[in-house]
Amino acid sequence: MKRIYLIIASVLLSVAAFAQQSIDTDFTQTKMIKLSGKTTPKAGHITFNGVDQLSMTYTIPEGDYFIIEGNMVKMNMDGKKAELDAEKVKKVKLQRATLLNCLSGNWEQAAIDNEAETTITEKDGLKTIIIQTNVPKSGYKLVELTYRLSDGTLTHMVLEETIGVINTYELK
Image (cartoon, rainbow, N blue to C red; front, top):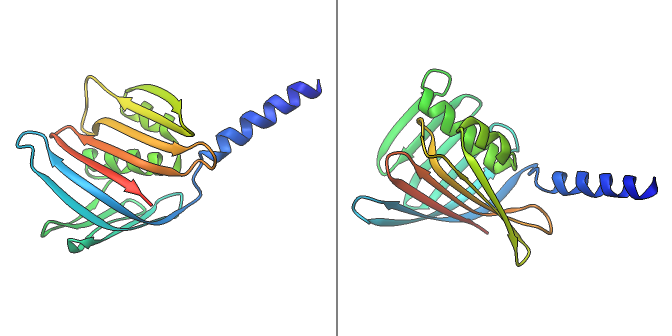
């Protein structure tokens, strides 16, 4: 009986380790357009409250930002500003939910929302989760997440959009 309790406690701790409460760190980003092969390096700071508040402020290029405040998504990317209500724009709603779920460690829900298959591997102290759909709706075609096993911290994230833009993030 004692062994069963230890196994249950171990599983619960493992699951809890991947539930990010918050993120506050610098990041680098590489944006690649698949069709042209053009890449653009970016960098900045990300702050995430673990629920529905996300702020990515860019130092390269300076002045760019991507902010989620509840259902509102605000951005200034590459000189293009937008403010969208995710409840009114289906694609934005799905991408917002996917991003927040991946950052919070709830990748299972991101896979369900995108009607996607998952592949999970563990190697060298890292857990990598690939979420991929063969029939992308309006969200992401592929999401790759890498978490440190020791503390569940997200260190690497790749988001491939259905339009052929791939954003790779390295969190410090």
